[in-house]
Length: 526
Image (cartoon, rainbow, N blue to C red):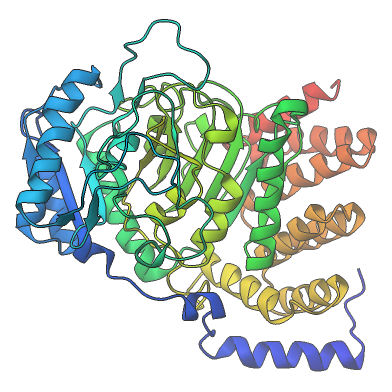
């Protein structure tokens, strides 16, 4: 690739550098959405009979400055799953009475059973809009009806049922249309949400994981969440096309926001040991238990990461390190994940694209998740600090050090050149990366070219990055990415040659991602 620039490009690059040396300006979205002190309207529920639950609740309240009088200890089952009767007597009934007795809600006259209105509420939240359930509170309500009709099931997640705590006659069979779904307003300013709560759950494989989730969310808010997104398509069609579209829409959202994206375009999940450094956002589907790259022992999300793998029953088990998806994702370092405790039906699960739009607009995790979920009184759970606001401050407001600087620079250039042709953006990124000897920035530019299906450009950029990279972990990743793009470009022979040379190179013999090269070569016929 030619390194020279025309006069226009040089002037353009100079203007970019001047802007990036100074503090980067927050995005207009993050500046203009009304603020909300969500912690001041949060209550925390723990299970007094579950070891560690009270301690975690106190720790969270202390970190988020939630008053002690907002901590609610209830005696409830220590099992993951409870009956509808147990839910009513141990959770819903006591909580509803407490909300009223403490004047957290003003009650309103009763409303007819299951009205057609989208907001059939009997209580108006005045002092509490967010409910946090701590590890130890059950998360499944078992089915009572036998052989129910489709969408008339009476099983549900505890969390989704408590989201409609303020309804006079909450539905038992089937779900209820979520009036907050796809609203662009923050929750206190949304329409027709009277009587609804944003419910989040701080739960996971063990107490240490939950405490780490709390710490990571707060730390990421302070430092900024910088890194790359990973999208894992499954090439679904027909009735499943909607899910594929959500994932593709997410890539467009990330690109416009200046977040580099690695996208896997194969039917299978990302292969084992595939290198995915600095992953802050992961969305994919459709396997029942964690496998592939994210299950590899060496894989670790970046601090504060948000990750979800869509599958029925993905949250049927939560307190585990290696079963289903939500527990293992948390064990690999995610701060937030989502899932379904029973079969949710695709259309009623959280819409990934809506969630990511809201998140990048500066919403809290709870606001983004519930505004992306079409149904209440249904199957979903939100695991992680619901008050976590990873993009409340604009991406890249600080340049940072090391890899973070590359991500901040990439974001800044993408934002400030948003109206320029793609070629100008990539030329500016490339010139800056070469001048400053920043191979990672060249790699991120290659991901952009690959995302746009400009594969020759991506290959050229990866070779440039490799020429300045020094660490074996960087070099092997760049060659693996290059081999994959060669395969996509119908250049299988060149890809096989590259992989064979890689496997012969002694500097890579102890690299964790070396088995990925072996697997890719095997898939290509050796």
